[in-house]
Image 1 (cartoon, rainbow over the protein chains, first blue to last red):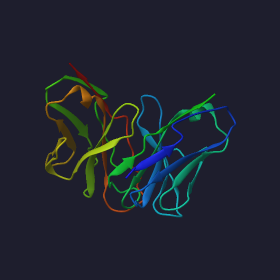
Image 2: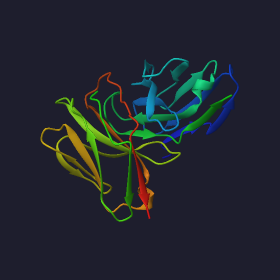
Image 3: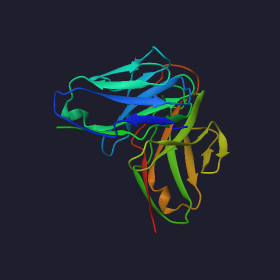
Image 4: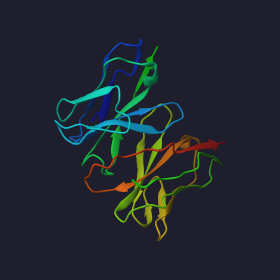
Length: 115
Length: 112
């Protein structure tokens, strides 16, 4: 099992460009999450999905959109990137309802720089 | 979710036992306490979870006093590879719309 995979690992964008971060899990988990982590900070929840076809806002959703394509995949889109979105993005999944404290499994992260 | 307070950073030496305390004065009856570990350039990893008294696994122990207003993560005989950030989370195990919040965590630095 690969667990949670994320692509790309690194990305540099110019202000105003768009891109989609991809996440997939092979653990048949119901819930999936997108976090961002700024230098020296904890993780902040951007969006989550409790099940296929549903998504909800987290703590910092502005500037992002998400799609729960199927049970395995949860993508994060930046429509018009801004330097404030420079961060490391982590995708996670858990077996159980979103918001419960079932163990979350994290991907390796995507390092995004917006110039 | 109950607010948690942890030390920003701690230093210790190889072979020592390390105890990291988390305060959660507003913990609710149904809340569990969960700890995650994050190595540099990696996503967090679940370490341990408990409700009361003591929980032990192959990695750590979690001590929770009777009033549950704090908890202590204990790492026995640490090594350099235990250098990481440790996050304490407190929340409800039931399915709901509460959102999991990782604070800044405790940055543990193990010295040789």
